Image (cartoon, rainbow, N blue to C red; front, side, top):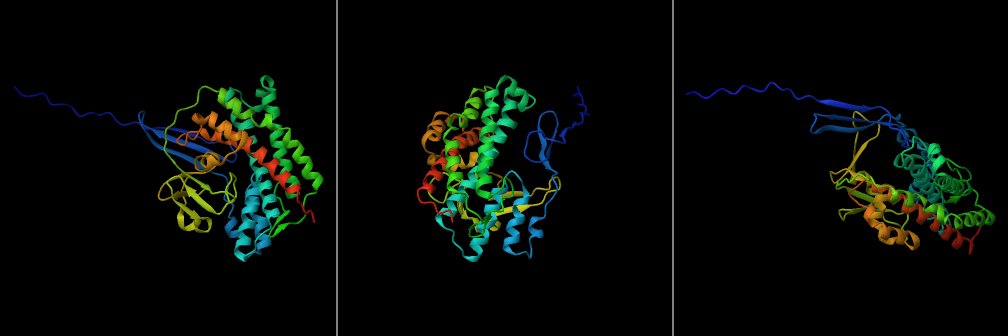
Length: 345
């Protein structure tokens, strides 16, 4: 008796696409595209369609003073970071070493940038989502104390940048060799008083995040990169990049160690280190140098260590919240130490 012939399956694999042209509540302009066959994701990509800036080409042939004035225009919220980085690169190229006071004032300017940016993201973009509101102002109807804390933190970050950099964005006061005009002692004392009064507000984001019970459990092992702080503490300034695989390199070797490529779907280049994608930011700083946190931030990081998972990108929210606590206190300490031997002229 012959065996029945099995008919060939005529089922075709159907690929479905999910495309979101505009992702809300992020700093920048981007969309996301996912293609899947019902079981497996075939393509997942973020499309960055914010226009190209060509800053490298724009500054070719310019004087270092003009170039360092152009670089911060790449972004308004993080202009201080771009300004300081450009100034440091110029100083290194010409062999100029700034004074300790200048270095500390630059760090303070940078901290103001971080506090404002973290507060914007956590309180105005992230927390409304987690608490189930369409926007921060709807959230404020039920949680006015959360929005008030966020705005107070955002304000102090902006005011630090204004006082040190002489204006809120694109701080032209930060210059090669120092500052065009130094802030007065009275201005610094005013910032110190305000920072002392923001310790409770600085913990508001972390307390709210911990109360959220539906965190996605993502186990995506990733490579982290962060600058080793220049003074052995936990901060953002340094000239050696550390990776979570144990390797490290000097910042001026960036072009040799980081492989950048242009992709069709994005105006942003894709970067790889040792042929791997990598993560930077608050979580990466915590993963690599979190043992250097001090005081209240150290206590909170130890208390909520389960939320600071190196393999879960959602943990970046907790790392930012820890950094807000830390940088409010560090800014206060920097000002206090500066004032003891401050030279405003």
